[in-house]
Image (cartoon, rainbow, N blue to C red):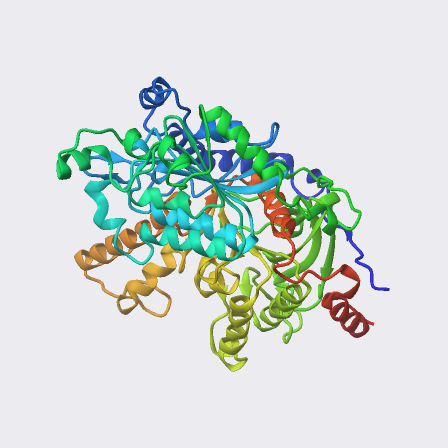
Length: 577
C-alpha cells in the first residue's frame, strides 16, 4: 500500500545563518514592510474618523465593525485587494481607499466565507473605478472554491463623476450581477444584508442572493428619492419607496428584517451555520494541524536585503509546512526546481519552488550554473509534477523567485520554447486550485510559466520585496540603449555630451522600472491580490489550503494511496539505484 513518507526539512536558524546576518536581513525587511503597514492603516480608516462618526450618528456600524461582529471570535480576517486604487486621486483630488469596498476571507460559523462589504465611510459606499473589478475578483475566488459569499451592502451606487470608468466596460459594474448569476447557477450560497443605501445598480446585487436581509434603516431602490423628485415631482423618501416595509412584506425582494446592524449580523451567522460543514477534517485523513517545527516568523530575516544574493528555499518551505515535514520528489533531476508535498494545517498541498543556489551543469562536469532560472530538466520536472497534482486533486503552491528562462544557443537547441509551452498548457488547463506566491523576483516568461496572474491562480500573493517585471531595470536599460553600446555593454561614443545624455537616459529607464516593480504599485493596479509580510505567509496559506478542501463534489480529490505521485517516486527511485 502506497504511503506518503514525509521527511524532516530545514534546520534551526543558527545552523545556517549567522545572527548578525539575520538581524541585518530582518531590519531591511522591516524597512520595506513599513509603507505597506502604513498603507493598510490608511485604507482601513477610509475617509477618517469624521466619516465614521457620521455613520455612527445614523445608528449604523462601519464596514469593518460589521465584519468584526460577523467573524468567529478569536479568528483573523484576511483581507485581499487592500491596495486597489491606493494613492490614486479622482475628481478634484478625492481618493477612494481600497476602492471603497472591503473584500476578505472571514471565518463564520466555522466555515470560510468571502465577505464583500461596502466601505460606508468612503462616499457612502459608492462604486469607483476598479470597485466592480475588485468585487468581481472576490466573487471569482468564491466561485472557484465554492465558498459562501456574504454581501454587506451599504452602497449609494456609482460614484457619478467617474461613472465613465466604472459603468460601461466588460468588467464594469454590470458584470457584478453576471457573477451573482454564475455563483447561483453553481449552487454557491450567497447571503446579502442591506444596512442603508442600496441604489440603482447596487440594488441588483442583493436580489439574486439566496437570502436578503434588511435593517429598519435600509432601502433598495432603482432610483433614489432625489431623482424621483426631479423626474416626477413627487415628494417622497427613499425609505418610503424601498424600505423593509415594501420589500419584505410587499415586493418579496427581501426575506427578513431586523431592527439594527447587530441583529441582522447575528441572523447571518445562524444562516451560515445551517450550510454543510467544512470537509477539511475529512480530507486530513486523521492528521491534526501542526505548526512548523521552525517558526514562520523567522522568514522575516532569511531573505537577503540584496535581491541578487541567494538563500536556501528549503529553509523557507520548512517554515511553511506542518512539523517541517516534506516529501521531496525528483531531487536529483532539474535541480533548479524543488517539488514536493507537505501538509498545511493538516491538509496536503504540493509545492513548486525555485532553488536559488548554483547547481551542477548536467552536461559539463565540474561546471555550475545559476539557480532561479528555468532549464530543460527543471521545466519538464515541474510540468510532470503539476500534472500529477492536478490528477490527484492536490492544491499547488507556487513559490516564485525566478529570473526567467535560460537563453542562448544551447537553450534554443534544447527546445526550451517547446518545453515551456508544455508547462504553460499544463497550468492553463489544470483544475486543481493553484496559489501563487511572488517571494522576490517574478521576471519574464518565468513569471508566466510558474502560474503568474495571467494563468488564473486562485490567489496571487506578493511580499514587501516582490519585484514583478519583465526584467530588472539595469537589464532593460541595456536593451533599450543596445545600439549605443558595444559587446561588453559599454557606451560606444567618445563625445562627452552624448555620453552624458546616454548615461542619463539609461539611468532614467532603470529608475522608472525599479519604481514600477514596487509591490504597492502592482497591488494598486490589481496585478496581484494582496501584499503579505513574510511572517504572514503561513497564515494565508493555512487559510487558502483549507478553503481548497472546504467544499466537496466539485472537483476530484484522490485519497493518498492512489496518487499518481507514487508512480513517479517508484520509477525515479529505481533510476537512483
